[in-house]
Image (tube, rainbow, N blue to C red; front, side):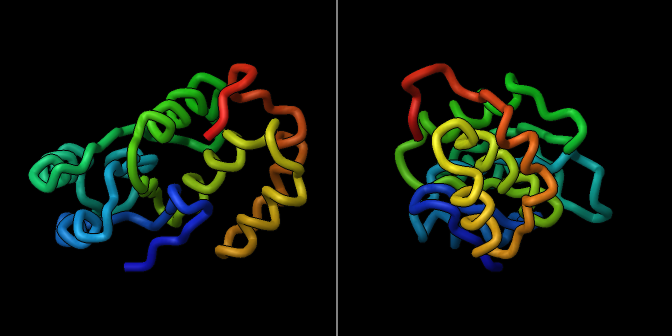
Length: 147
């Protein structure tokens, strides 16, 4: 399974299965963030099952399901805190990795230029240019908080 790095700490992917969790542990991942609502993708592993497997390998698991049309500043802050509070690498996953990349983009929307954010996402295969207006106006984090 391929994990795409947006930073040295934050990676995104399509849905994972329990059998990749040992490899995540071996690679030093400390947290998995599930941005995929349970039941959205046929035959996907349920978040509770993955949480149990992750715990067995010492990996924290956070369920933050996201629907693109329902992203709020509170959702972004919850996601950001999950990343900030983690010592080690974080893997966020959804149906394709795009929503997890969108969360990263929104988290940094008031820290980096639009070109930098869209370019970094494009580098790993996600076109976020359609959300340019939202990225330019979104204010996700309290002042002074950095990832």
